[in-house]
Amino acid sequence: MNADALAAVVKMVPFAAHLDLNIVELGRDRVVVHALIKAEYCTSGGTAHGGFLMALADFTGAVGAFQVLPEGANSTTTIESKTNMMGAIPVGSTLVATATPLHVGRRTSVWVTRVESESGKLASVTTQTQMAI
Image (tube, rainbow, N blue to C red; front, top):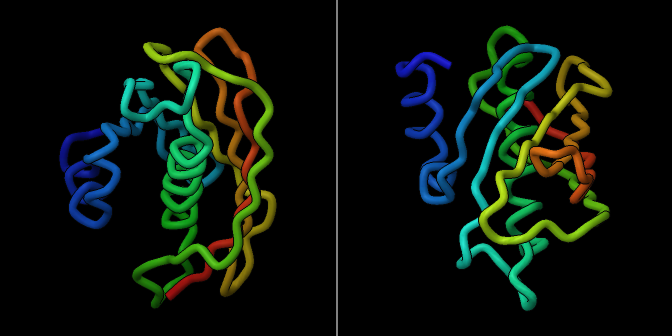
């Protein structure tokens, strides 16, 4: 991702910079974000906390929704989100969040985000609805 586009996203969502989320692919049909699991992002046992997984997925899906905003809209907001936790990923691992659109409508879009380890172990699946503003 080019530096200007990344800087614009970080300016809009400073929480993403706080979590060191790294957008590696950006498009209307797919968004990929990487995140290193730090100790402070973990629950007991040294594995990624569910809240961290949800924050990563929410950000990734929202970035996707931003790519498909209809003409005249300039922002998006999450209006519904559901996450299934599937597996524990240990501290020090890099997570790969991949969001794809399930539906793109006039006012809303629905995104499915799979969060996996680099080796492909599934950590969570999030389905979220984003509303254009």
